[in-house]
Image 1 (cartoon, rainbow, N blue to C red):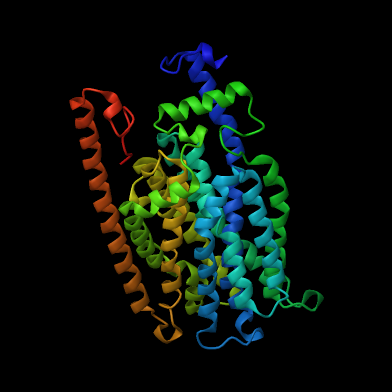
Image 2: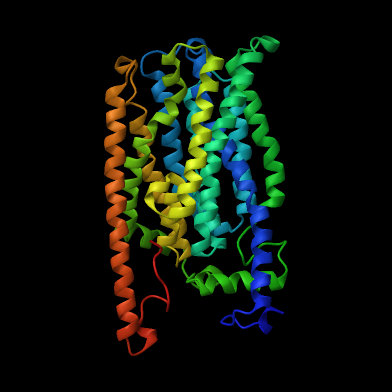
Length: 426
């Protein structure tokens, strides 16, 4: 029994049990790589469809295509916080996240039939909104703070590799499916990619875990060990006892200035990354056809995946490693109260996504073929976000020194605001 191995005693038996538990959890969590790849595929397939008559067939003119892109972010922003509040309340991510996938996969398929693409994209954003903050919250509920960075590294590099796969899949569909069954090629893109998402959803329901205290495929000993490891790492007992209600978490998140600081910094970072939504279009300026254009995009994403993993592995949760790694750092910064953490992650991602709305309008065709003004805006935005994250890094280091001084000077440990040994990961 786990009780026979005291929490503070690091013997071989406990270490072996922890490693076995971690391997079992990693095996289950690895499906997140596939789920997030499908999330990106269904969210960005419109940029691939643009290469093969999408705008012409739907009679989109002027800023209508840009509006179609940005309206997804509006739906995405709207449902972020309610989605994570529901996830924390129902405590069943193994059901909620796959259900979101089922809905957005269905909408993706219907987008191939429906001419009101703006409306379809708004509801696609609503359906996809709970997924990303929900995944980050789920990972933060299971792993110790020094374990989160490596898992985020794998997901981060998986984003780039999935983008390469997405482009390869899109090039194959756009090259081979023209006028099959009387349907335009870009419509097949929505049918096939949405169908793949729905198929994987069924498997995900049986593979994803819930939370440490209510996952059904855990033995009682494994559950006790998982909760014990997280408690030693500074996770509050609220993870188990539900001390903080969801409305208390909402109030605490909204009143914490760090949440708003991270939100604006994330907005600038996402604005600086807006070129990814237009990457196939930018490659068309080289003068190749749609298939070759998509294939030319692949090497950059593969290279980016390798670089991101290397940076994340060595720099842990630093800003330089990218967007997903940023949320690994954020989840560690708000590690103690689960309700606040759930809402803080969703709120920061939701407000940060306003960068996507703005970014959709900084790539007008009138600025082509060089798009130098667009690139200048992206570089400036990334510079601002890097400066803000750097400032937060030094502030958290200052807080760590303050926490250490408080531990040394206090007479009664009950007077301490933070658990003994707690430090922000910087």
